[in-house]
Length: 487
Image (cartoon, rainbow, N blue to C red; front, top):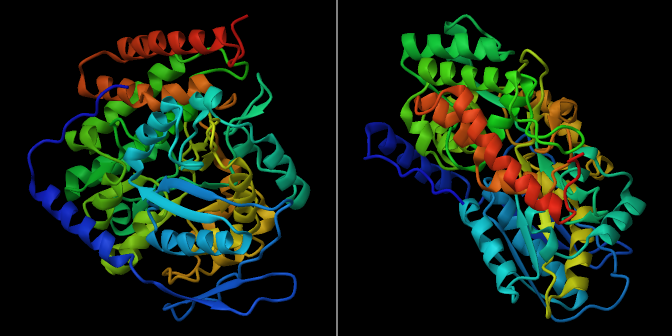
């Protein structure tokens, strides 16, 4: 994997962002009081929570269904440290309570999102994984040969809860092998987050609706108000997602619907040219060294006019910087010359290592329990996590229209109610196959954009170099029978 760019010296903005980061951590502490109540008929435990927000409704209760067969032993879970910390506070209790109910000793390890890919790869390559169940917020298709097929979990979930969203199916299923290399019961939309006061002053009171407006308004804000834009050009997850969103909006793609490499096209070159203009007009070199939290922290610090991200930064700002939070609004996918679609911000891939000693039965049963309680997942993530089985969260549109966690105005998140109409998987227009997973993991797309934006390569050269790397990856996986196309 290519090495990350190293940050430069500490600037005034770095100091402000570091301060905001501290506020980020402090602000997301105990936001809910959790208690265990008597179980209703047919269950053994119920978890209820109330928040300190006066407008908040009562949190969903936890349901329980006995496993199909007795379980025992340990279940060790590895997952990222959620950008909305209240989720992790809830999840750890939720997982342990389930374990107590079914006779399994559950432990949960949270690590920083940037450390998860290497941790998973290391455990799988060792052949002796330390965890029975692992989760990452982007596809893990490149690990298909080393993980358990989750088809039976998907089938049981669909029998219980209806059809999984196509968005998450394409992010967890390989049509060439017929294998679900992961289970993807939840996902996160990726709207645009913009500072309304800045965009009003630039002549766009409702923020940008197209990539052309983003360039025009963002450049004007930077020139006249001194506030830059926050779209990353680094080797991290948000830059990966943003680059794909721009690429598709211009009509380009990494692969076609038949899994043939299609990156080197006039549409891709136009998109790369656009990113170069956007960087030159509205951003600084800081974006080349960003990590996954940088755009969040910059928005909270009041130093960015627009980011392409989930709602987590805004949630943190509600506590850490309320005046910023009140000024942040959201847009759906921006329209480009070809379309208006966006990569899902986060795609939950839960995998089970295929190795001796792994508690496969407990891992699968826990995932069904998690799916049964997606309403709690959504609630305790403060509407960050969306369900792949929509009927499991029947109140989602109500919550988005009247935010129970204090949005001002209360319907600020209503734009997300149409997210399934403009969100897609990272393999679009094909599936997120192992080659797509490796291209994502090696950050080839953000590097392509960054090299052109920096001027180290022409857009044509940057695209051609990306194509050469991507073709080798596709050829390798195709030779193993795990990627289609090639005819």
